[in-house]
Image (cartoon, rainbow, N blue to C red; front, side):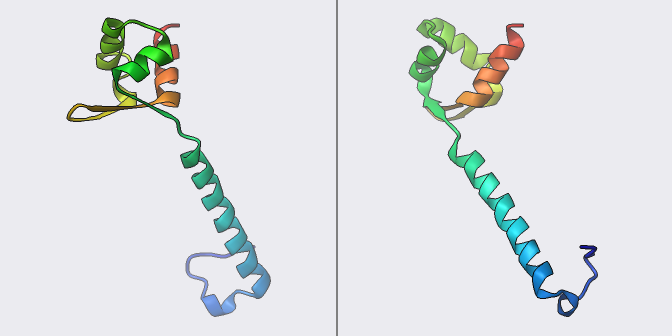
Length: 93
C-alpha cells in the first residue's frame, strides 16, 4: 500500500481502508495495554516497602536516585514502580 498524505480519500479502496483501520486499532490497543500495566506506590511508605529500606533511606532515595520517577503535589507522593526500579538499577551498577 503506497498511500501518501496527499492521496484523496476517494482514491482508497475498501481493502486499504480496512488495513488502515486495523493498524490504527492495533496501535491504540498497544498504547492502552502499556498504560494499564503501570504500577504505582504512594508515599515514603511505598518506597520503603518497594526497596525494603528504612524511612531515612526512603527519603534519601526520593530526593536523589528516584527523583525522575516521582510526582509530588503538596504532601502526596506518587512513584512509578517500573521507572523507579530502572533508575535504582542504573545507579547501583
